[in-house]
Image (cartoon, rainbow, N blue to C red; front, side, top):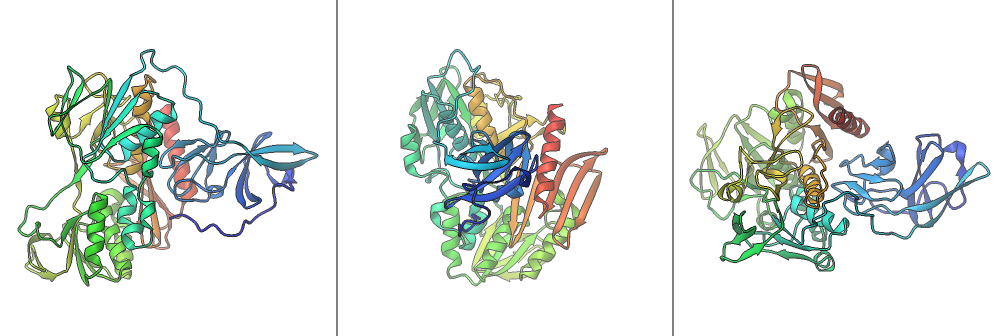
Length: 511
């Protein structure tokens, strides 16, 4: 959640500070008028940029500087210190930059530089596509369209989305917005003017049913056809639905879209007791959000511990205890067998009553379109290192993409928001002919009351969990290792260590 912008703090950088007060590699926050400014020293150079991340307002002074870039401690966005450009999602907006002068052993920050469009990368294809079609209105699709225009692609961009809403900030739908702590205008990734201003043809409630790879056309449900030179499939995932009686009742919901979230909020306005089926990240974030609305919450899940499969037993026990401290009642090693009116019967025979039921038992990739169009699929759409599918000119990104992870050496498919955005950005570059491999280290964050959990890397299997700090004290970093190599790291209030783990994995990948 964004920080409140109060009275500027720190030294007046217009008046200058002593160079000795900013050692090599050091960071310091001051102000220029009403603007909070971060200054960073790298050798003999000093950079001055906005002090807060353009994603959710994270304090960049608490982040990590690597090369000539600064990384946000909260959600691992990355910015170029020279230009302010947002290099890595989840941030898209650049930082403001200021002129810096050094004289008489002091550092002075001058005028804010005029923002200019970033220079497009060199070395793209000689045959620039005239028309790019993106199927999907989620994280990957939006990030691809934004990057295409950032790279000054002048051709047509058509986004086909079967959603009713423009691309939204989906992580917020199970966190602050659902809890009633974030305004609705935070939810769209961009306002409607962004699409018209950037000449992005966003077509909502539009379902694609087939890709004719010979004629290079996307076939729509209404039998219309949309031609493409390059195509990005970013169809995302859909909630797994329970095959039990009663799931079609009006008070039973899944959470994926903005409309889903609004429906849950409307029901929550009069609900006194809720059942959450599933102890996944989404399920438990929903539980926390509903507790913030003073609704009694019961969580039903077949697991022995919440999220043990991803975070291990110790973190699973901590998460359960955290939710129980806030009044959540768990029914673990249980499943729902039926929902009848306001009552849900569990596999043990226990009956729970509820005014609201939220089913959060996972998602499955939406690969029907890819499969019907003859693309190679294997529990996802198979892509190469450049995110291109088995058909030339057709790319895939986000929840549907399965790629060879250069860090673990395994073929993986990841359902993380930031991964989808970064894949969309890489796919955009490659649709323009830049042969850029997707090597980003997976990252996600989860929020449970006032406790954030950051996770970098990807570990489906491990033989050791190395714990630094104290989980119960909410100050820890866990390294998930296999054969001595760290595949992933989870942390609570160890932001710099989390960023350092990400950088270490990046260096191993590029070695």
